[in-house]
Image 1: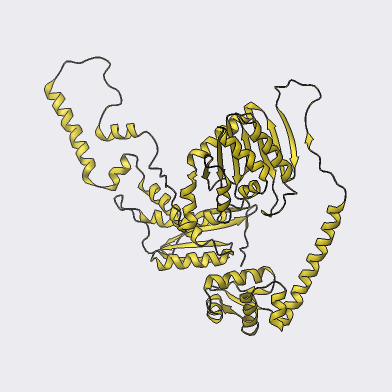
Image 2: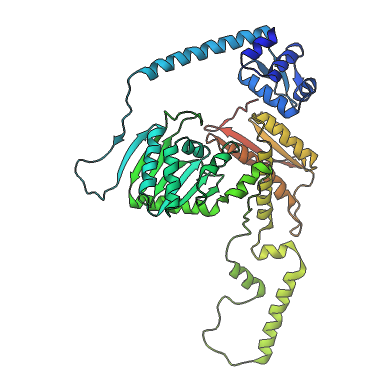
Length: 466
């Protein structure tokens, strides 16, 4: 009977069973609960995460974490209280919507001005914004660019008239380009686009907007938090200015060149791997100057011809050949003098590995669970030991089994190892503008080489959700 009431309240069977088990067996590990439920640890974590958000399950800050729950009677009373609050908010919202409030499009235009002057206006509500996109697509003659962020393709497909106008523009010969941030749940919507529309993915792009013929720009100012909502709170700025549009297009072209082809990005969700090309920076400075210095070539050639001296000619040639031959000895330090930074390259490779780890652990909704799984991976890979602590602030302590050495010819694998941590943490937390990650030196002991401090707001340590 109690179980039926909990299911009627909106919980699934695994969540109900979790309450029953934890209510009588407090302070259980997720792995222990998973065995009791005959399910995977990831499924157990996801059930626990939802129950934590509802306030039914609590967790300790130990490692591993231990979970406890209200009993069945307390859980139902708690859910009844939550539902009453939700119903009250629904009634208040309905009353507000029912009022005759008309949203107006406000325009900052002078009463008299030259038609070439820049003009702008504000559009509110998603329907109005996509009506304007429809008009842009119908009037476009050369190029139409859509920045769709993570869920923009969903919004476009839910506005069939705008979608049809964009597809018709592509059919008529307009160059249509879309930069998006792919999400597994929205990939299928791209099938509704005309085949001539080129789509690319960018990890860094979250903004939404449209550009028509390098003249007119729509830039979102606000978007509703709920991606499947009706967009009542969406707002965008329309700017008609060739100068502004040109600078906007230049920025977009830079993003476009570094963005990933659609089919390559889709492979993330079919193969569960990041297959994007990895672009490495091998060094900096003048490579001509580096090679000239190594080979002993003067910075300036003679201004005038000098008499031919066979002995001097062959002597100089032999010196250069010996210097060139020395570079082939296979030492890493030889690459360094040429300006090729192996440490930087390995760190970038580590960053990519870290991003892939974070991607593979994206199913863990809460940060502590993510860190626990990441630490398990690190230790099982034999790289060393990772630990997190809250004293004096939240930080991750890095330990390596193979710490840095002072040999210039040693392959600096510790750079890649540290890059893995850097990449995983930045991939997980960098999308939150309120969070900053700081790397500081540790004690120097192999078990305490570096700390990654995760800050929230203005210097205060973040409180990770559990």
